[in-house]
Image 1 (cartoon, helix red, strand yellow):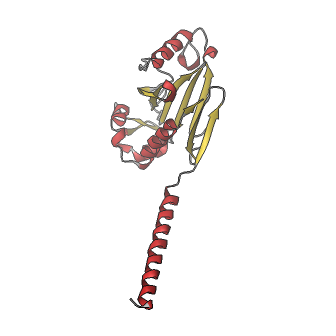
Image 2 (cartoon, rainbow, N blue to C red):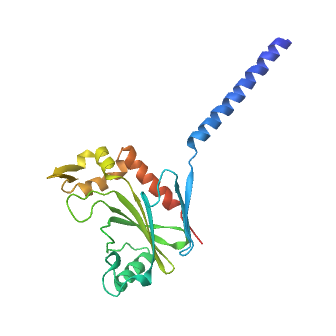
Image 3 (cartoon, one colour):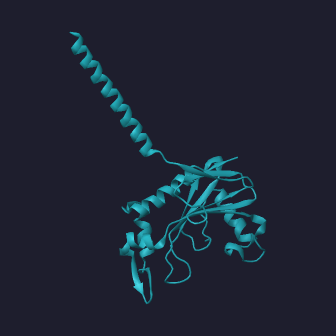
Length: 211
């Protein structure tokens, strides 16, 4: 093999290696997600969330002392007795039949440290014109109840899922029984915004750590 042929082979190898390195780094940078962190020292937990999510606007976190609940029905529709029953059910890994603030379609999930949480959806409050897209996790840690809620803008979700809605007088609301239909089909939903909402929520919940 003459020096010219050797040179061509070396140049070809360099191009292949550098091209592959560029492709690898390009894919790595495209897939890189930047996160922000939420930490609460009182209840001793933290989690991460996408930088595209705005705290207080899209994502809310309520950390409330259990003792703050009144003896009679008040905060979140609970009194001390009903809240302690809810807490007792959840600590055993059982789904509570009590609803906090219009929550529907609950299921129990296990977090780390043998702590159980209840996932729920809120699709409406109060009246026929109410359309909401909120998913939340409720759990107890020490003397606190923690509620993590991720919201998405209703108008955008309605535009992405028009088959579930109709006009009522001067507003757009859910069709009859369509909340349940939407929930039953949610895992097969092809909408970009719907899937982003669900994936972001799962990412937040999977990142929760306790101290």
